[in-house]
Length: 229
Image (cartoon, rainbow, N blue to C red; front, side):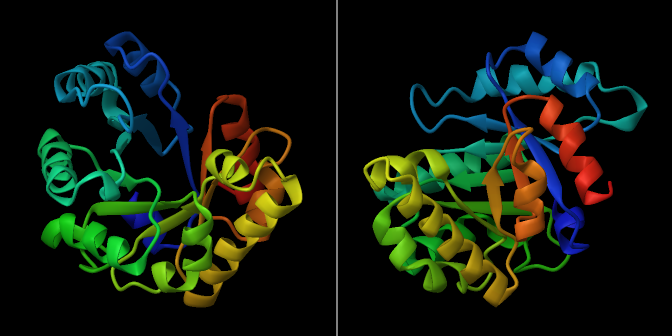
């Protein structure tokens, strides 16, 4: 992931659903995603289950190797010590990226960067670990420039689903919030991500989004063609 982002390549991920070894085997058979988005934001923080999922990928990867894994943890605001422990457990388990939801301030962004340790990219230009900060609340949008401009931030994503709830399902306000975050990323030359589907993935790439996360595998083919990959 880090090497693609460093080369200004569009990066594509797909959500895990069942989180089973069997699903891992199925997902790794598809060579189009660059990473798998594995969420433990809610529910049990079950590292052994994630490891079994990752082993399912590894055991069926073949010569091309397994996919990178991006682990979404609960928000930093739920507890700094707890977040630090979860990040450490994820990295120890072999994930390539930690996703921090509901980031609201530059202070939280700095904590996220620090939690990645010495192997975090781009703080370490040779680093392999990617931090992904999700802006999903009105206060986060208001602080978008400060969050994005925090030294060591890898990727920032405005989360459409949570932002829609934050703005009372107002589609125009939600899209304005998304564009506010994108504008900050473009200003400071930080990769910006978004969720997208078959019908809007090419448009999002044209707008300047560099990390796209999908639910349906069909969108990966559309996105990769649009990105020239």
